[in-house]
Image 1 (spheres, rainbow, N blue to C red):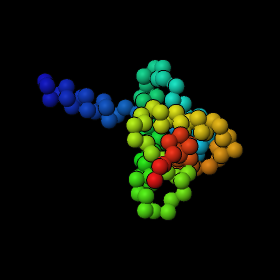
Image 2 (image 1 turned 60 degrees about the vertical axis):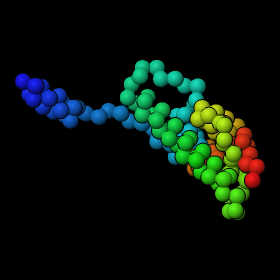
Image 3 (image 1 turned 180 degrees about the vertical axis):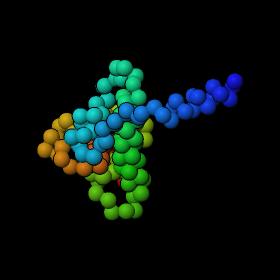
Image 4 (image 1 turned 30 degrees about the vertical axis):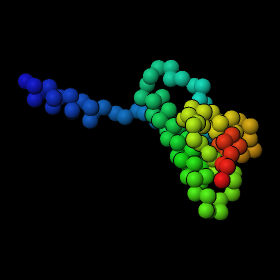
Length: 127
């Protein structure tokens, strides 16, 4: 009986349609519209959770680049692509990038990676 229930559960999971359609983040405008740090999940749906994960992943990737660029002081990287993020929280980083996007609508069609400038303005690299 236990094996029959397990098989039925597995079959149900694989037969269920996947309806989650997250909005991917490619531009500054995408980040601004989809990743408002003050937005809280309303329904707790899988779609909301996936979107939140995408936003956090994008923000963390950009922040990692900015921090590595700052740590590697022997490279010739412009200061606008470097940030000293020691002591900053994930939430503060997300907010700084969102604020930068909000303040620069002329950059909304630019690739999302340009939000690194928001981090460098908030936490300039000392190297």
